[in-house]
Length: 149
Image 1: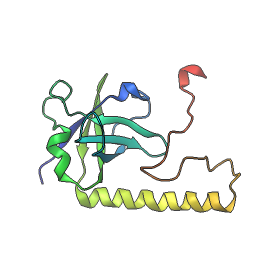
Image 2 (image 1 turned 90 degrees about the horizontal axis):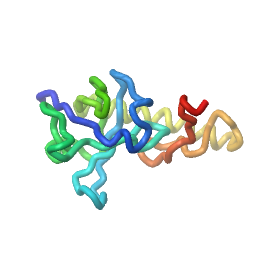
Image 3 (image 1 turned 90 degrees about the vertical axis):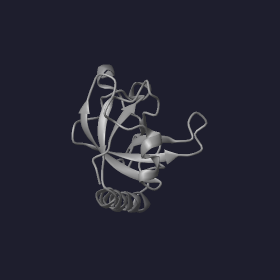
Image 4 (image 1 turned 180 degrees about the vertical axis):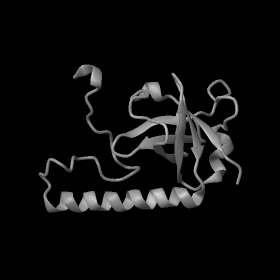
């Protein structure tokens, strides 16, 4: 399979580029019920939630990358991409092969299961913050930005 690169846009609407670094993996989740774009693919980070979307507009897709519409049928409901480099407003990612993506998804699910069991053992444990379980369903966690500390 040829290398598939994609542009992540809209990060300024969430946490900006603060939570990202080159080489990091991000999770992709299709949103067929999205009212703005039926081919929307959300970009999510575990324990944070949605951090952007795969660009799907000719104005937002960086040259040499594919839009959400062009990669929509290349994977099932979810997949994984690796951050290749970061610009001032976008991230360029490479879509991982289904085999590698499944390995990351399984590894994360196993880790999430360990967190679930910790929460069940002691629901008042400070180490297991609420809303941290589930790769796709987890809501955002409260993060104090560095500039506010």
